[in-house]
Image (tube, rainbow, N blue to C red):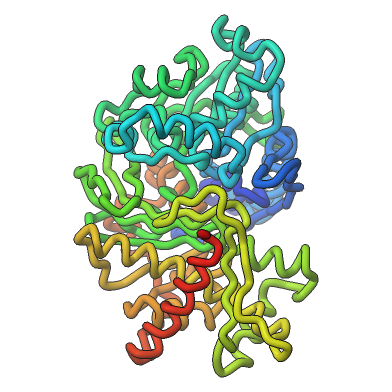
Length: 498
């Protein structure tokens, strides 16, 4: 009796801020199987956020092995794989041993705020933005690298001697998969460091000098689709898998949402929230504190995007669950929010690690305003969901001031499954909001990139045909109510900015 033919598939490794996932997709962009593992977050001081580098590595290994075992049982064979990752998170390790010399400093971390303020006195912000597309903020990797070199014994001397390597999480995983043989990144991750020149597509010597980062520390920058080595059978427990794609999580999500043309826009709601607007081959410099970044680089050609970053989105719901015990699961927030006819005047400003666009206030801290004796867990749950929508509205307002007015929005990420939030978002933005059938668009985007190695998911045209909308919400709120809610939000923001 003949055995069934092995079905082709592609693997996406999605290494995020609170968990790692490995997801296998078939040739129709459908999820075959997946595995997920959460890991611990460390908060050693006010505004500090760290990960144990070994947690990032071990969670990746475990989820890849689990997903491959499931896929094999279902008759699939993975032909290629890609990595998508939390971006600015910074690791430095010894080249000889492969051991990190300090914990991973997470993108949310604000410990270098004072250093950024010091540097601000000596540079022209417009000069920095023109070169890197970014602002001077602890969010980005450059000051994190310098902090590690300054605070770990003998690290600067080792870096100057070429004994250390820096990388965002993609580089760390590639190095571990290759047992230290490869030190690589892609253009999207490089563009989030404040050390990369958007126009030239290479590390910038003047930026390296400003942030005191030796060039010898840096990985080679490659296209998003390239030879990134293999995931060896000794680690997968099955067979070698060519590693053919890398993209930062938000850029991967933009690809997964088929935002291939200038003007197309998506917003991802995970731990944080990130809005990317495709600007094509043009680097658009914002006058309203948005970021210019690489959207992707293929065949040596870069496309760009304008980005707005919100540091806390789903993390606020996690806070309600884990620290306050107000809810048992994130899904409860939908029912709780819908149980109220209004927000009761309660606003949550989730500035747990400062505020992003358009405020860029590193030392802002969170607040709940408008509490009354009658406010309960429903009001808190609703305030957490509303805060995400208000912050997105602030990003849209900044884009409008830059002359860019999106007429619709595609959303993804875990929070996008919340139907109440989806409607409130459409109301506050006053544009239609679309949710795809595959919410794992970050993983899907890097899977499409990785599939270019085999052609499994097809070209852009076929990929667009496979994208499906599962829900669409249109604005229903009257203008006066929208303006009143946003006015209350901005008053709450003013309180934490004092």
